[in-house]
Image (cartoon, rainbow, N blue to C red; front, side):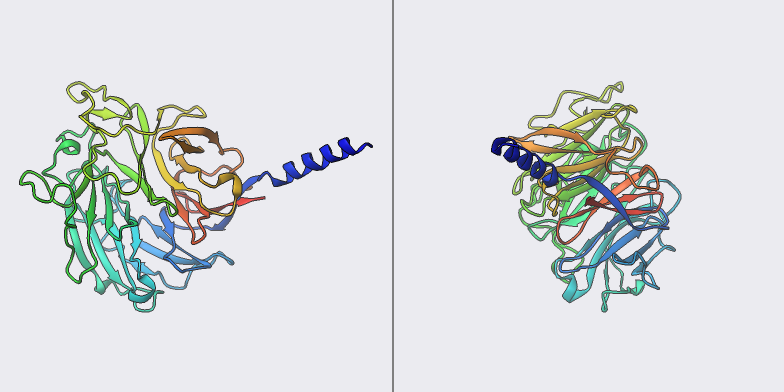
Amino acid sequence: MNRITTAFLIFTASSICSHAKLGVEKVASSFERPVWAGMPALSTGKLWVMEQAGQIWIVDLKTGERAAKPFLDIHSDVSRKGNEEGLLGLAFAPDFQKSGRFYVNFTDTKGFTRIVRFTSPDRLTTDPSTAEVILKIKQPYSNHNGGWISFGPDGMLYIGNGDGGSGNDPEGNGQALNTLLGKILRLDVSAKTSYRVPPDNPFLNRDDAKPEIWAFGVRNPWRCSFDRETGDFWMGDVGQNHWEEINFMPRGKGAGANYGWRLREGSSETPAKNVGGKAPLGAVVPVYVYNHGGGPKDGVSVTGGYVYRGPIKELQGRYIFADYQNPRIWSFRMNQGKADDFQDHTDELQSKDGKIMLISSFAEDHDGGLFIVSHIGSIYRIVDR
């Protein structure tokens, strides 16, 4: 064998070895309709898993076992009537390890979305009596509650609130600034008071607008995220009958942004009679849309995800997301403001127990690695095999 051939084989072998063979490993199971998972800053080895019915559990990632008692149990306060109601989102305060404070987003038994602050002195369990209601929003219907809640890179608390439900936004809430429905909200919860409106919120001094609004024109934002490396904002917004969409906003931008709903579904005019229209001036165009169907690039209900910042080199910098009804997992990179290098990971990201169904959320660990949350009850970690 000559030197050139030997060198070629060595190069080829090293190239094959360096390419990640993606897979998943189940880390926990037997949850009741889990819809969110994550961990506070500076935490390792444990994952917080939220059940839609009203409980949050801490799971040991080495053993897959949950703690003997829930981290939080508010099932008696949570509405469980509709498929989209319940305990939907959690945000740990940036200083959680010191203060024990965290915030949840849920629909209550009276038909309101509640944003509530709790305090856990030992960071392991929480007395429900520590609840402080930060904000209450009346929901006219049982669907489109959004539910995402997170602290942004600016230290403000962001909330994704759906348009109020039914179909085609019958009250026009998405484009109306006198309601908190169909909006991304931004609050300052750093003080002991319930909240303050940040002085740089875009509609603070307008008589015809709610000052808590940061952005508007959203239908049902189901899982948003901030890129842990860049601070950029990502949003999966569930469509009506035709299009699902992913929206992107660079860090430091987005104040007063209009994402187009109900005039626009995806990047098109909403086809329902007397609903759709031309794109509003300056409306944000989604960076990625896909149509309804059962094909490899189709779906019915988008589940937004994260930009991967974990240890798997081939995934780094890729935005990973999924569809809930047509259980597929995809990713792409942003290239000059556009989605590029689309990839389908569905076949490789499957459990040995079978296809991962009803993907309700993704979860991020302290290293930027990702987990997949199945509404059926299991949590899976994305791994390099």
